[in-house]
Image (cartoon, rainbow, N blue to C red):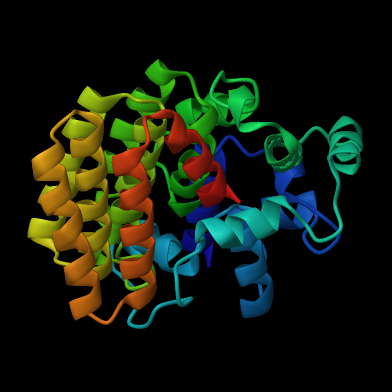
Length: 298
């Protein structure tokens, strides 16, 4: 148990979390300090609760603790999908005013992020992308030495608002730090999700040279680990990029192939999405991408 407590302390300090920030009514500062030093024991239930408090999954905890994966996934999709992260940062019934008041009362990292998420949810998309809502997330991510799943999904959410230099620098960090998750049973597609998310952001910003580079990264990931749904997403974004870089014939061929591939795999919702969206992209300029992106965000 001493070694488990030491790993908890290592993760907590790596994330910049104080004893007070982790402690609550179920785990006091005194108890946590004693557990980290190996002075007291902990039940399985309370241990799993503690891992959630330090924003870590059981699978990644034991990976860091002993560099071995669990024999079974701790959860079906790892610690977080972005939907799970959103649920944590947007508790049911919360409002921007409530989140702001909670942060003023207890200025913890999670309360700051929850407040910023609430603000982003209510802001017009035109106001997002100037770093107004992502400052705390950027500061936190730069300060964490070894990102976990929480940090990776936190980046994918707040990247939409980051300044371009921060976004590009942290994307490279995210790709590097997420490499180990390809072996995790709980989150095998995390690198795909990060790259897919990044490409949509670059296309929305009309950063087409950057998107071209990211498409190469996406293709390499698929070459290493084929995945049907992400193959379709890759081809969809490739067709979108070809249209926006004035390669109309190649774009039309890529769009048709994307729809045919999705239909052949019986992913009919993706086939319909690709056909409708790429038809609109072909007949509208980049201004359409803003409204299209708004629909995706919603």
